[in-house]
Length: 403
Image (cartoon, rainbow, N blue to C red; front, side, top):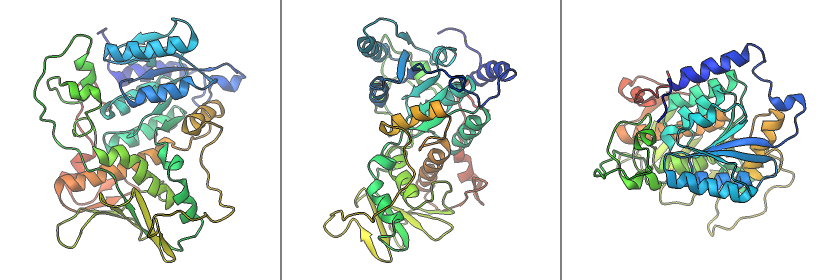
């Protein structure tokens, strides 16, 4: 692997030089450019391949580079790009910094395992790139707040990859926000549970896998093939499990539905096997969201009824309900591309994406420690529990620390 300086210093110094001459919020498209948005795609072993396909399907994008630490993933992605454009011009890289450091790339798609999302997003934004990052956008709460700060400081467009928040769940949003249930104070979300320790046995690293770079900020451990085949989610060093994977979709959808997507809970109570049956998030306005792994994907109860109903049927939504969602055309990807050109905030801007991930992380901490937590959603601090507060961030393996 080529010699690289620490990720944050490299990105900061390069961007600072540009910033001295150009205001941070100005994008090349503000000067009248109308060509395609040039894009690099990082992390192409699973969901990232699907996202890349979505961008390749847009006439507004030119994918010029791909990156993955597994050579087979990288070459497969390059083949798809070259096949789309009938050329061999797409560059293939192992190290993501070879993409974030290119001046001719305007936006990046990040589809790596979760433990890499923050470091790559921050490096890309400091180098003047707009970012589309798969969910969960973060591995820790502190990472998310830092990503918000960097996006605002450098004037970058950031979209999280939770397409289901609107695409799958907008019927619920129209029903609840349209008043069909009256005053809604309870919601239920069904996603899988938290992650845990990784005890996979050691396996010899095969040719064509840069295992050290796959681990990146995560603790050192031997290779195992499950981890590069999408099987990293059950393990705490790389992911928050189902709580953050589907949770960013579904808890994020519930928060948006209840207009709580720009704040967070004040209390988190795990089940105790007695009085508390379900993990419960309570908000300052009295709303409670429960983690129910045996119920429907999402449910709401108000003073005038409950959805889904007894038979699970969907009635007509209230008329004339408009809820701000995607801009432009083409779903979540189209929303991002529209905002890259206009410099608007996308639907899954980093702030609500971070807030949804934070709720999921807090749920995990309550599960791991088996005790209630008090949370200040303004200061983003756990109140009165120093041991729990240490879980708000993780020590990163050098040289990948963000601060």
